[in-house]
Amino acid sequence: CRLCRAQSVILKAGALWESMTVQWQRFAKGTLVAPVHSPFSAGGGASAACASIAGQARYLVAEGFNAVFVCGTNGESFSCSLAERKAMLEMWMSTEEVRAKKLRVLAHVSCLAPPETVELARHAAALGVDAVSYMVPCFFKPVGDAAVAKMLADFALAVPTTPVLFYHFPDMTGVACSMERVLVAAREAAPNVVGAKFTHNDLADMQASIRAGFDVLIGSGDELLLPSLVLGTAGGFSVPGMMGGNRAILGIFEAYERGDLAAAAEYQDTARQMLGLLKRHPAGFVGAGKALAERAMGGAAPLGPPRPPISALSDAAELERLAAEMGRLIEKAR
Image (tube, rainbow, N blue to C red):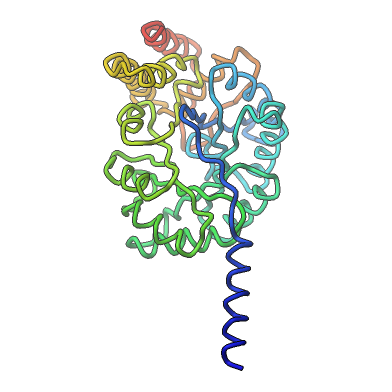
């Protein structure tokens, strides 16, 4: 009968929805994510340099990080091959710190070709990452909130039991949208859309997303962690923290928790100056940051030069000058 067939369809739909339910452990207050550099050999290869990832993991845990963002902007994702990105993620997942749950792993999997994005996402899901991160294509671009939401949902449905974080970085993608509207619409189709990495300055949009139930981390934590904590985020990302500047970013968390907003603001200003130092350098925050991070780890984790078109900071005297300037800011935060 029609009623029986309708009930059967409803039951099947319910079973499908139940099968898509994702177990997501929300970010705890104080979440500090390292947007890790991808290690390359002097000749430019990544596979042979992967051994240095173990040294990175040890260093980052000692510096107070509790999560890593693998092959993101800082990790030169779009400059790496699929094989290299898989190899690096496999090495991160095999580290003692990840196996011991000292580091959560957020895997950025976006590519310009959607099938390759899905391939990397399924590889990451099979490895058991904590979440995959999706950024919309930045050459042929979706236009409007609905188009962005559909691309996000379609991606998420390809890995239905893996938590998905939307990587909202309009300055890089050139795609302007309301993150809150995108997340809400995508979640209706794909319940494993759980949150976002928010690298933007529209904090009203970020707060609206948090109020809608999403887990949002501030990508530009070195500039905006304090106001983001006030608006409800659990934490954020730090670049200078990976090169000895962790005291500033940790100081923000600690001062905020004890209610000392004046002290938190001072730490935030120091973290901002640290990131500004990298941004102003001719090698840029990736090239200059990678050189300083390698230096800070004292040979425990060789990172190698970045890939073109990113400039390398290869002049030893200039590296020492920059390290001294960063060192003065590090001392200020202590």
